[in-house]
Image 1 (cartoon, rainbow, N blue to C red):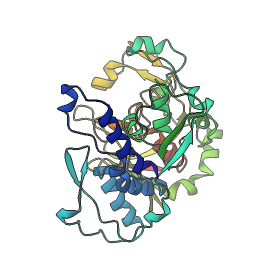
Image 2: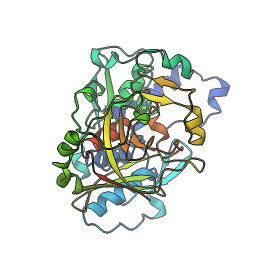
Image 3: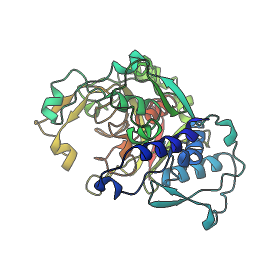
Image 4: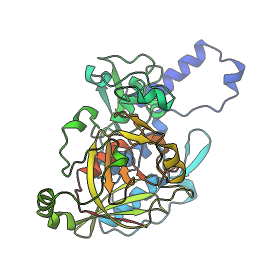
Length: 365
């Protein structure tokens, strides 16, 4: 009997042994994890192919549908006909979502959809208290994960809610050696970020406060040697679809969901270039800049870490204070607004950084 077959049995036994309080009985029942398997299989398939659906949550949400459409486009396929009404599934007990047409996809290659993962001691090294106040955060040496569930969820491109669904009753006291059920994706390794060599690395007091003037002649010459490789790659940010696309020699090779600027501080429409990349960046938190686009002398320098507002990677554009970057809230990607920058999940921004370098064209439209 596999994991998904066990869950209904466990739920039934729990119901037979105890009577829920009246307040709990009034709530809509949560579906078993098996209800999410088909959608999660598609999400894992797309994630493996570098057409990210965002967080894996076992739902046919908008970014799963958009990633699927772009995957088909990249492979020269015509968009599939929408499924009939009978193809709808229940998600989270309340909302119906149409299952997209997945004909022609090798979804059988995703086997299993979920795998067992043994928690390692290294997974628990980047965990610690994170105060809510910005001044208090600025006093820390790092902004780590708040708990093990957050760390493991990000490692496997999901969130704590879905991780809890896959591992009922086990997330409050995770320790090394525990075995958890997780999405079967390539893990995001936080400890490996510092060892990445994206090239064109930049440094500064804050990632969003780096100098964007031309580099000294010697460094400029070194960058020019790579100009041909850079010109073969371009990035396109679709502000209406909240999707970032990567093209190589005019072929679509990857896509990631993004959060863009708000009506108050829009992402800069136009054509830009990558200036450089910062790993595990600091962040200059300046309320005047974030709210009105004007720098002030009243700011806090936030330390690096997965809970830094710009995540674990900053890709500076040739416009001061504007970059493509990670986030401390991957569940909000595409569902909130930024302060003018383009925000991705940490696991996606690291994959993006591996594909680009200084000089790569970035179109925001």
